[in-house]
Image 1 (cartoon, rainbow, N blue to C red):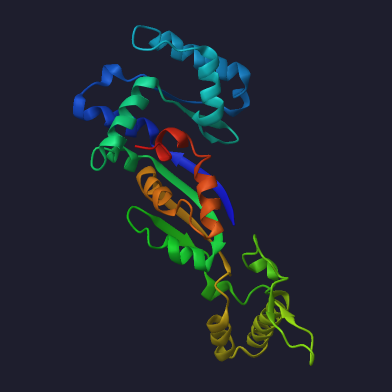
Image 2: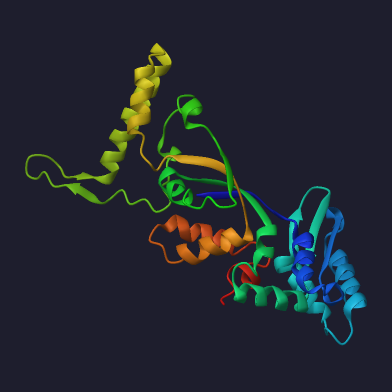
Length: 269
């Protein structure tokens, strides 16, 4: 299972909207901006941290420059491209209000719906079936099994094998023949799928393709560009924490690396 090209956005707008109900814009103590990627080293972080202190070093907050630098490095970099780096430095007062709204529950936490996230996920079909239960505020574009299945050889690398245990015994045939293991079954499955694929390529007979689709294991890997928001992510994290499918642990591990994950996504009421 892989997570690639992760992006989050609309942070400044979401936190401005957080202040709308109270019209408490003057209390906002966050800083958002874009810097040149080449400069996004110690000097640039130092400059951003100093800018924060210059703006909000008053009775509302008592920022320490080393803590600000640490926050920027660990959770404040939203995007790092070839030419520009986007950052969000969430202030203590804004985070306090955000967590207050999260504790209050829906619809008070609706600012989370305005923090967008997009990622390319490569995962098995059996996991995507579970992920498809989360349809609110999500969009996904996938690679096409129908159009691309027959174009490349079918090997074990085409399937989810992260926690594969090929040594599990399946059939005990002693004394007439050796016992069969999961490895033996997979060898047969892949051989059958690849044979059907080759026959379809050779004959163009759609029946071979249909049987290949029919027997294709659900561990077949599919890549989708998946887009959602922080509110949906909080819901997924709540319901999938501790799930017996190891793929959900991988998903939660990915989510834990998102900007301000501990403060917003994994924050406990």
